Structure formats: C-alpha cells, structure tokens
Length: 320
Image (cartoon, rainbow, N blue to C red; front, side, top):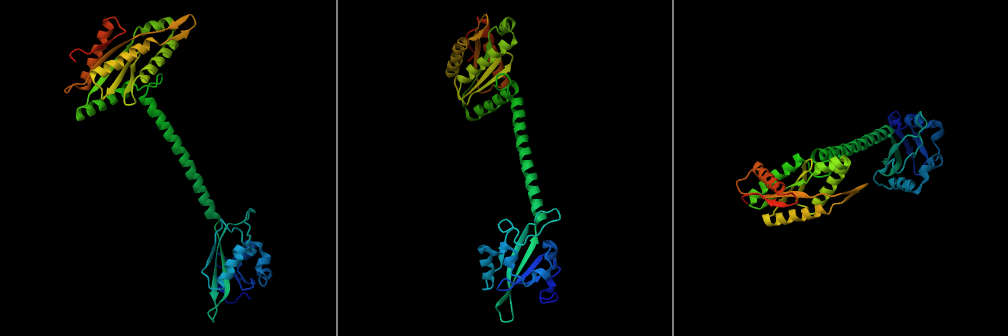
C-alpha cells in the first residue's frame, strides 16, 4: 500500500501500527514500526506477517486475529503474556515491552476487510512499576524492622533485662490498672511483696554473676507458681512483687507459701559448694478505700514483719 493510502493518518502516531488483510499480508507499516524494528516499509509491506514475525503464527494469536474478521470485539495482547509480537530493540539492545490491541476495520460493504494491530511501548511504565514495587518492598522491610525495634525498645522499657520480669515502672502501672478494675467490679485483689533473704551475703561470698544466676532461678520459681493472669515484677535488687487479681487473702497466702517452699529447693551448684536461699513474703489485699500507695505500704509492712520475725516465712499485713 502506498505511503499516502487510507491509513496514512496513522503513519506518525507514537504507536506501532500494522494493518493486515485476511491472508495476514501487511498492507501498512507506519514510521514508528520502521524506527522500532529497523524494517523499512518497503521490506514489510506485501509480506506475510506470520513469516516475518513467528510470534504472530502462534494459534493463540492467529485465531484471535482471524476472529476479528468475523466481527469479534478488539483483542488485547498483554505484554505479560504476548511480549515481543513485533521484536523492537531499544538502543541498549533489550527488546521493548509492548502492549498490543488489534481491532477490525469495516469496509464500505460492512464487512471487516482489515485488522489494525497497534503496539504501545510500555517499557518505561513497566520499569517505573518495577521500581515502585522495589521501593514498596524496601519500605515494607524497613517498616517491619522498625516495628521489631519498637517492640524490643518497648520490652526493654517495661521488663527487667536480667530476669525477664516486669520492671518496677511497668509493675506499678499494672498494679494501678488492677486496682481500678477491682474497685470497678468489686472483685478481690492481693499483692505479695517478696525479698530474697541475705542476698547481699550471696553476692559477697560468690560474686555478682552467681547472684544474678540466683535471681534468675528465683524469678523462674515465682513465674512457675502463678497463673497467666497474675503479674510478677522485679522492683529492685532482690525485691520482687506479685499481683494476684480475683484472689482473696486465703488463696494469696497459699500462693505465697508455695513460693516460699519452692525457693528453699533452689540449688546453684558452684565450685566449692551449693548456693541456696530462703525468702520472706508479705501479703496484703485491697480494701475499698485504699490507694496504690496504701497497698504498697501494707505489703512493705507485712514484708518487714516477715523479716523481723526471722525470715523464711509468709506474713499477712496487719489489720486484714
């Protein structure tokens, strides 16, 4: 078909345009395809497109193009599935990624005489999409890392590094929440204060590393003797506390006694001997008008009495 034929208006579109007849003869080959493929229209026009471009000879493509001559709606050839229908190298040597649409053109008699195959270069769009996906994946990785760091920092801010128990600040916040809940619903709540007896002697005799090992064993005993709803905290040095929600004084005393007996079974084997300790425990339960300061003071009083009476015992706070 001459350059100024009925399709000449599509010659300089920024799309590759090829026009075929029913026999797949190329009737029009625009300037964009000349540039992309390196094939002049003098070489392409009049040739069987299937011979020039084997991708067009695949049944999945050929059948859809033939259907267009029978009035079928436009056919879309996505670059994901039908890439390089017309191989078109980029300056760097890679082939362009092309999104193709084919549609029938009806003649004067109303029948489809020609099929137009238009090709859009989507290489840049694809590359930008891939870059966006890479950026998104990188941001997601950074976000996951940030969350892990935040979780770790939150844990460091709330838990004792040696024992893994709640630290003093976190423990007191938990106690405030449990006091409010107990008062709101009228439920019982008890607090147990605990001291490891003569812990300074252990540090002096065996060293701080041995003392740390003992505190970790002690923390494990406390955790092992309470429920999931209970909270154990290290309040400082060898001082610990346990919050017992939904627990009356008798039950709290039983928990404290179990812990006291378990602590006596701790045995840290060292060269030259065995480290063993006892514990003093004070138990108090929340009354209606008590504040957190009142509850802590009552537990301290009970703990002081336990130590003053010879240690290795559980004492209930006065006035309960």
